[in-house]
Length: 140
Image (cartoon, rainbow, N blue to C red; front, side, top):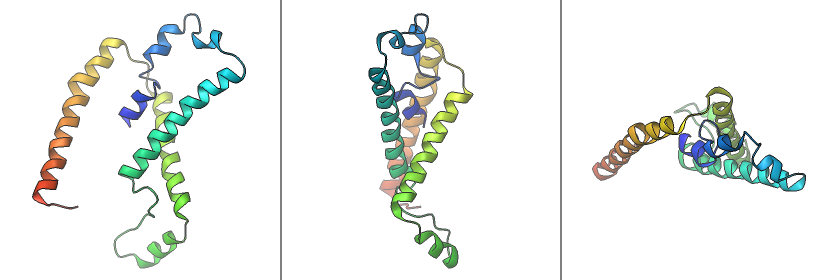
């Protein structure tokens, strides 16, 4: 979620937009349909990132099942797979929008501190852990 938020230049990672807000940046350059297409491209980028996240981490189009609850699982199987996919994607989009509403914008030094001191080591540990799980044959 953090990577998608940073990739789409949403707050708190929107440093390029923060620098241009004194003169309104692209707001003064684009108007009308060009402005609408600019923001449409931003939201399409968010949708694509969340669709990939929903597919990789939330099971994509697969319904939600709980263990041996046959009645519950049969009811979940009646929901079309396209609705499952769109629902999971929209949930992730909601989380990204929630980030924008909640967190203040970061300064450049805070952003670099977050990326290099925290996110990079966490991703390396995650990569090593998943590699270990794959090599040992542990499947959850």
